[in-house]
Image (tube, rainbow over all chains, first blue to last red):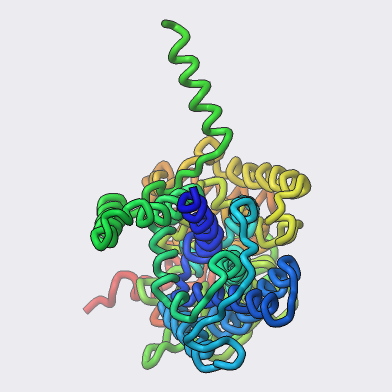
Length: 289
Length: 253
C-alpha cells in the first residue's frame, strides 16, 4: 500500500510539472532544458523556509512560487527574444548554474550534502488536488486567447505578429506560467521526499518532462497527463526487472516517437462532451438489436 | 492620404531591394504594384508592415509616422496583410485561425483565462460569432472546424484574407492573392476584393502578376523594376507604357 501511495504521489507531482512544461513546449514550442531548475528553486526555497525559519506549508509554498516567478522573469527577459534553439541553450546554462550555486553555497543549502529534515507535508490528497488544480488552470489557459496565441506563434511567429500578437509578451507569459508551476512541483517534491540535493534537478529531469509532453502528443493536454502517469508509473512497476527497466522504458518511448511522431494523442483532447457523444453513439448502435 | 511612404530605401548587403519608393494611397482606393520577380514588391510590403525597418525614408499612416514600429503595433494600428506563400497557423482550426486575429484585443485577462470564469466563456462566444462573420464574408464558415492544411489551395488563400480582415484593418495589403488560383477562382477573388472595397470602405494595396486582376481592380498601378519605380499611372496608361513593355517583354534587338 505504501509503495502504491508513493508511486501515486510521485505521479501526481510529475503531472503538475508536466502541465507546466506543456504550456512552454507543447503550446508555445519552446524547449527549456533548465525547467528542473525552477523545480529546484521551489523545493529549496520552501524547504529552507520550513526548516530554518519555521514557516508553515501555505506561506512557504507561496514564497517559493513567487521566487520561481522572479527567477523566470530574470531568465526570460533576455532569453525570450532569442532564436528558439538558443533558448534551449540559455535555459540549459541557467539550470546548471543553479545546481552549481547550490553546491557551492554550503552554509545555506548544505551543498552537495543536500538539504535534509524537510517536514513531510505532501500527502496523497494534497498531491492529487494540486495535480487537478494545475490541470484545470492549464486547461483554461489552453482554451483561451492566450493558448491560441501561443499555438499561433509556435506555428509561425511572423504571421502571428502580423495578426497583432505581441510575440515576446505572449512567450514571456507562457514562460512565467510554466516557471511558477514547475516551482510548485518542486515544493510538493521537497515536502514529500523530505530531502533534496542539487543533482536531482539536472537537465535530464527537464529532458524527461519534454519527453513526456512529446510522448503524449505535443498539442494535447490529455496526452501529456496520460504520458506523465504512464511514464512515471512504468519504471516503478518495472522495478522488478531491475536494470532492464531503463531499456524497456527507452524502447517504448522510441517506438512511439518513431511510429507516431505527433505523439500518442496527437491533437486529440479527452473532454466530457466527446465522451458523452461516444456513449450516445454506442447506445444508438445497440438499440436496433 | 490614408497611407503614404516617402523615399523608402532598403538594401540587403550588396543588393538594393527598394530605392526611393514613394506611394500615396488615398482612402477607399485600390492600388496595385506590379513588376518582374525580384523587383522588390514583397520587400515594400515587409517594410510597410514592419517586418523590416527601412534604411531611410518614412511611412505615414493616417497622418502619423509609423516608421520603425514593431510588427504587432502596426497591425493593431490598422494595416492588415496576407502573405504570398500562405502562412496559416497549423495546430489551429479554420475558425481558430481567424479567432487568433481577434485575440490580442479580446477583453479578458490572464486570471480569467486560468480560472475559466463565466465572463470568459461569454466573451469567447461573442468572439466566435465575430470570427464566423469574417469566415462568412469569404464563404468558409462551413469549413470552420477543419484543419487549414486540409483545405484546397484556393480556400486557404481566402482564409488568409478572412484572417487579415479580422484584424480590422483600414488598409489591407494583399501579396499576390490570385497566385495559384484557377480562372473561376480568380473571378471570385476579383468580386470579393471589390466587395471589400465597396462595402467595408477598405483601402487596398495589392501585388499581383495576373494582369486581369490588376487591370480590373486598380485605379492606379506602380510598376517596379530592380527596386525602382518605373512608372505610375492608371491601368490603360500602364499597358501602353514603353518602359513597362520593355521590362516585361525584354528589349528588341
